[in-house]
Amino acid sequence: MIRKYFKVVCLSFGISMFTATTSCKEEKKSVKQTKVSFKKEGELQLMKAVNDSVIAELDIEIADNDYETQTGLMYRESMEVNRGMLFIFPDSRPRSFYMKNTKIPLDLIYLDTDKTVVSFQENAKPFDESSLPSNAPAKYVLEVNAGLVKQWHLEVGDKMIFTKD
Image (cartoon, rainbow, N blue to C red):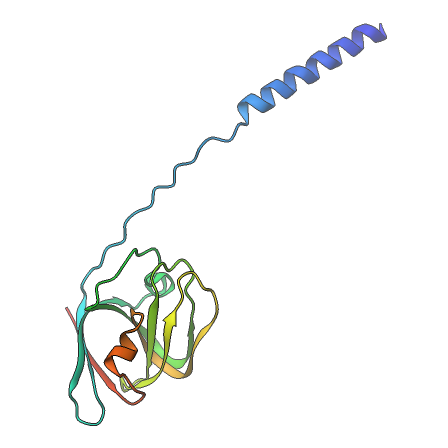
């Protein structure tokens, strides 16, 4: 009797293990990566504070809601030199960004309520989750390709104007 019971238990266990290993195999999950493309939503000019000469003109995407400000330029493969993303916040306060899921190196330009440059962070490294603080209250943040702040000779006190499409 014990032998018969033992056989039934072993057989049941074997069937359970076979079923578990065949029905619980991991299926290959295909992650569909959607390509994020630039959507022009406005135009922006950066100007020297000393003489109002134009430093740069950019086509911009605007991030002005929670989803857009949290996503920013994440997942982008590249960005043309004459483009950028302008973050518009409802208030002016110290800001901090990071490069999580951001594939391209960026310069971040922090601006106050008067659209005056208060600080910038240059050459932010892709995928780096270190804090990139504004070090001053900012209402706007402009993200552009890394190296442009230096190329433009941008300085604290320079100005920005923009129009929405």
